[in-house]
Length: 348
Image 1 (tube, rainbow, N blue to C red):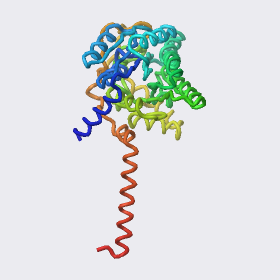
Image 2 (image 1 turned 30 degrees about the vertical axis):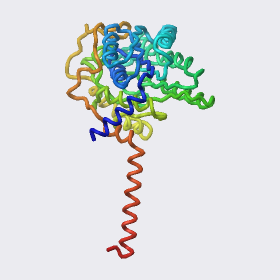
Image 3 (image 1 turned 120 degrees about the vertical axis):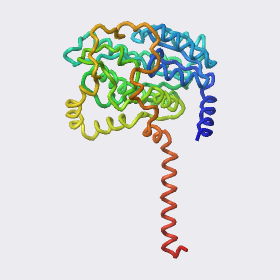
Image 4 (image 1 turned 45 degrees about the vertical axis):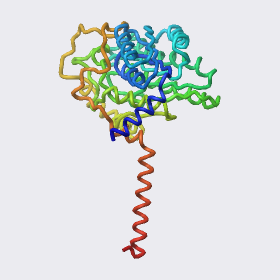
């Protein structure tokens, strides 16, 4: 098992060696884990985020693995800044092969307690930030007729939950935008690919720095996964032509439930969606948040829920190996069928 994993890691490293990758939201959380995963396999990375402390720490990590890194401190809500950053990446690192949109902000609050300015800000970053990143990537990828754009989505792009209306709406918008883009690329017979990686609850720092107006501190809805599980899915998305990737059984369950029984999901979330998103610890009303300005410091990839988060997903492993599993299942069925025919014919 370990020998096979080492072989796969070596092959993956050969695939990404000296590739040029841009990651938005690169300073912390899922974005930081994605940066580490690409850098560990020889990629050079353009690092986009607002927090300079986290960006510099990410740069050091990339360089310690032998890669080149370009720190690009900016707000993805600024379309020109994003496009200028893409131009700088191409000038200093080389043509962009993979662009990962991940930057996000959120507000944990009932809708009636969320201000128009807060809705606007979440939309500008968590939706329009993806639009700006995608446009910057397309301007450079389409003339070359190659490249991959990966949108970090969420189960909440399909199934909205209480207390995160602004974030859920933005993720729905990203999904709609990406589906329109995919049809246009198909129409143009373009070899530029776009794929969405939809996430479950992930243990990231967002729960310590997102704006919150709740009685207690926010938490990811259990079961929770570590950001490295997502990073593995992003690596896979970069090398496989999948329309969408669902990471984790909770993501699959939420999406299927929304398609099959949305009314049941509504009532379940009305009863359980408030409590499941809060810890038992009272919220500090003076805690800093990153809605309009970054929170200083290097916050890394993980949030404070390491003791609850899973570092692997059986569902994602099965989805990643679905063709091999299907082939094995068909082979087993054929073997059993053949043995039964042989037994009926006299056997031994």
